[in-house]
Length: 132
Image (tube, rainbow, N blue to C red; front, side, top):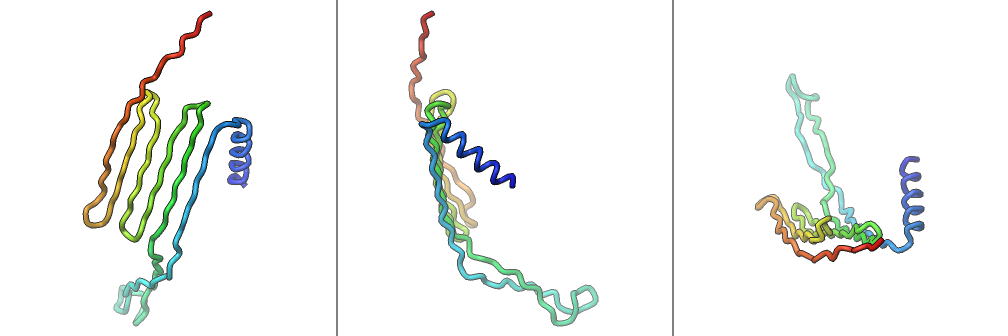
């Protein structure tokens, strides 16, 4: 129920704001479930003689992205991420309050760990002068 309320409120805010833009997408791969066996066999401390415990593991693979452009609030950001097994690659950017834009390209895997390349681009903000 809470989720429905949040969705309805989100749509209402988007309709009222009128000129903001937001988009998102998700592609998920539900591959074949592969059994992972854990032997808890026999002995006094086990779960009984000859019984094995089965967990099922689905190969992780997905891709998603989103984009927000709201000139009224100044909220501009986007992200795209892709995962295939233990390899994750992605990019995100966002406009910061000082007018600069942060761009981050990242990747990670089990062998080399997580790496991020962060760049900032500066845009000059021209202040608005109001005369009363």
